[in-house]
Amino acid sequence: MEILRIVVTGGVGAGKTSFIRTISEIEVVDTDKKATDETSQFKDTTTVAMDFGRLSIAPNQSLHLYGTPGQSRFDFMWDILIKKAHAYILLIDAHRPEQFRYGKRILNFLNQRVQIPYLIGLTHTDCQNAWEVEDVAIALGLVDERVRSSIISVNATERTSVLQAVIALVQEFAQYQQSCG
Image (tube, helix red, strand yellow):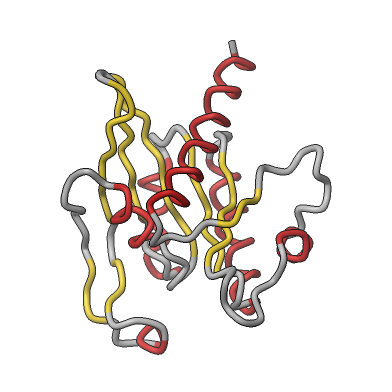
């Protein structure tokens, strides 16, 4: 069985757990606990270690999806989960620009540790005051389209949207493998 390990990361409330729950063919293993800090302003529970889901993509191929905690106090889990990942998706909440700097921090953290394919998924793009893709790219410091990764809109609660994001990431991984050799 060939397994492709994908990390789903982002800030609190970006949609990581929802993303995994939306496409997992197994009941998602999660470590959600009651939110007791500023996180409780956005949601009732928060991931403290990881989420895990699985999706079969061919008879002998499956995706293992690992969701990171969104809070920086659990960033040691980012380190653990990214080490054996084949690719990752960074979810950014497009209507909370105060979170863009934190998203950039996560992106830098991961890119300092691994050189693997990734894409950026903008969530909550249907909300009032959501930023456009190009504006978020500028806020994240990703202004050179020739070298930046793909930035796509994704609704973490709609299966078709999540599958499109996963397909795009798997395609990035396939291109990466071909270029490596």
